[in-house]
Structure formats: structure tokens, C-alpha cells
Amino acid sequence: MIRVQCEDFDIGAELEALTRGKTGIGGVTSFVGLVRDVAGERRIGAMTLEHYPGMTERQLADIEGEARRRWPLEAVLIIHRYGRLEPGERIVLVATASAHRQAAFDACQFLIDWLKTKAPFWKLEETPEGPRWVDAQASDDEAAQRWTKD
Amino acid sequence: MKLLYFAWLRARIGIAEERIEPPAEIATVAALLDWLRGRGPGFAEALKDARVVRVAVNQEYVGWDHPLRPSDEVALFPPVTGG
Image (cartoon, rainbow over all chains, first blue to last red; front, top):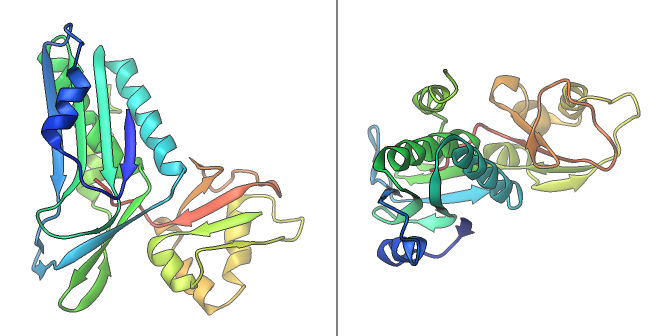
């Protein structure tokens, strides 16, 4: 399941809803991304996340589909926020549930790695020197790449 | 053709979206980028380095040689930074 929203989410309530009634699930892995207050040497006052409505949901659904093809998953949840967020606030939740833990761990890592290089979101940081668009990281490309090596 | 711009591409070009009718010979994404660069200094500056321009046609990533149709929604944006 995919959700792109401005408002915050409750991690406990989301994980509870994800697994409720699905007694074949043996393990749940979750990843929560937060806004940091530093980026390298810069202090970050807040950031604004922009996205491409429509394409975002499509890309996330494609990524979820790919994860379900690769691993035997009982449930998948991706929630990604947009708008202005301050340090400490939640940006993204990725949760995967499977009968056994390894599939849940691997699929969760795959989902966040692919999301970071494919989902059309952009971060604009508020710094003491003024607003600054975050650059894409080569390390994120490398993290996504390793899921294409077979 | 509907064009959308995001993040610093939008900021440099100065608009978020527009409808355009490029000449008929503009048949691919690469040709469209070349044509857009000639529309003004904001476009030229925003699109000068194609290595940091990503293109989606009808909300799917495409390459430079992807063909274009008048009904397409074409989005230009920098490498993504979500998550």
C-alpha cells in the first residue's frame, strides 16, 4: 500500500493495521526516515519536500510491485510525506511483512534504496545561508545499483 | 504538449508548467531540450547540463531518444532526493 501525504503518521498504529488479521506473518521490518538538523557542515532549520503528484504514486506502486515479485511478502506499506518538515519530524515509513525475517529485512532495504533514486521527490533545505536544494548522492545510486547485480 | 518543471529546474525557469506547441521537427526528448534552451536565458541556464536533467513522459522515466507526441505530458527535473 502506498500513501503520499502532508500529515504525520503514527508508526505503531500503521504497523498494527498492516499486520492485523494476517496470522501468516512471522516478521515485520520497518524503516523510518527523519529530518536531520545537519547536512555536512550546514545547520538545517527545516526542509520542504516537493513531489510530482501522480508520478510519485505510480513510481512507488511500481517499486512495491517489484519487491513483491522478488520476495514472498504478506504486506507492504510505504508512506512518504511532502511539505515543510522540521528536524526530528518523520519523512518516510517503509514496512514489510513476511513469514520469515530475511525476506522482510531484504525487501525493506530494497524499497528504501530504490525509492531514494526513483520516486520524484526533492528536498529544499533552509540553512543560515538561505534555501538550498539537496544534491543527489552517488552513494544512493550505488545502494540502489546493488539490487540490480545478479 | 504539457510541460512540467520541478525543484531547481522550476526555480531557474521561473514557471511550474506550461502548454507548448513545438515545431513538428521536434520529435524526440533530446530535440525538445535543445529547442527549449533557445527560448531564453532561464531555460538555457536550467538545461545547460543534461547530466543533471531527468525526463519523464506521461509519468514514466525515458531516455533522450524517446519519441514525443503532441498529447504527451513531459516533466523535466533534477535527480530525485526523497526518502
